Image (cartoon, rainbow, N blue to C red; front, side, top):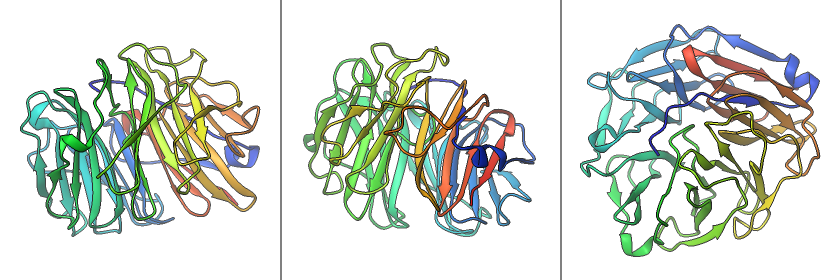
Length: 340
């Protein structure tokens, strides 16, 4: 969906809160995407064709622009090494593009340009370096989905295999996390607007099922913003209304059956959350989420309250097992957490 917004991060546990560091990004661009390859290699992306890379865990960040992309907004970055990464630009018509580098950003190959004037791509996800999928808002009643199986060429899925979108339903290009993959074949994407649903496929998009979710919706600024699975069965959804970031509501849900059914998480409070994910800790699995007014962490989605609830402004998160997480936000903000 076409939106401009800011976000916040939610984190847990006093140890977690005390272990965060604001890193010097060397840019003032709004950062919308982040991908942690390891505890050392992390990529980020944002406005005006900007991308960033660190090879030392964020002690130093290198900033650059993709040539010819100065007017594009990179809402998603998916990285695989210090040399290999993809960027997705979100926007109407030919502003939606996918780029790839295999040499650390020295050059970028423009792999896909959207030539559908009504199209708007939102985010992407990858099973591995060469196999990925991207989702865009509906055109003529059908969500747009692209796949690659060689890491170089993208082709659309047949509209006949995709369930019909409801009037006013779309996806959010907010944090690069409206689509998720797991294992070799599973893929899910989350929607908002007039309806809040999760589309799920167990064969890389050849066949789809759809499930309703309990997340706040009904306006073009509300719905499911982020989806994340820690395995093929256990996943989490986050969302709300980005125009009302402080408003608490039905903004966090989880599934234990692969996305067939979704239940509201009991954890409170639930402000607007734009990105969500699990992080592996020595004590188990933690839940991280971000939005535009608050930030929080809990042991898992079944907790009754957050361990820590912070006021901070961030747009997206990425976790590098087993204990590190990065979050990015407006004006070049990058935050690193390191947990024992």
